[in-house]
View (spheres, rainbow, N blue to C red):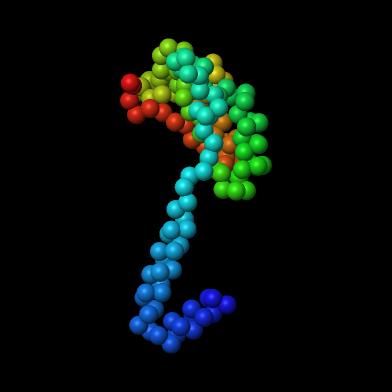
Length: 141
């Protein structure tokens, strides 16, 4: 009904066509700017004693957590699963590749061994309809 009224208005008021089209474009952009809604392992797995290796979510816990999220939160727009804190530490040091880039600790993420990184794990998350993210610091503190 509203659309029919708007179309009739635009048809009879040519000078308003641009304003109506611009308003519709702004409304579409505003609707697409919903905040990111997701789950971050920091909130559940962080260990405040400073041992970075114990603050990460082990790979063995991820399938069930992601499945629960896909079943219970995805229908409400919660679509991002993030591994945070400690995934690239071995207990004291960063685990990095030959180029110095952080890479998942294979002791905690076995599927990441042999340079595979998070490919296997992210494929599993994506198969559930979720986005996958891994948080990393921009610098050493």
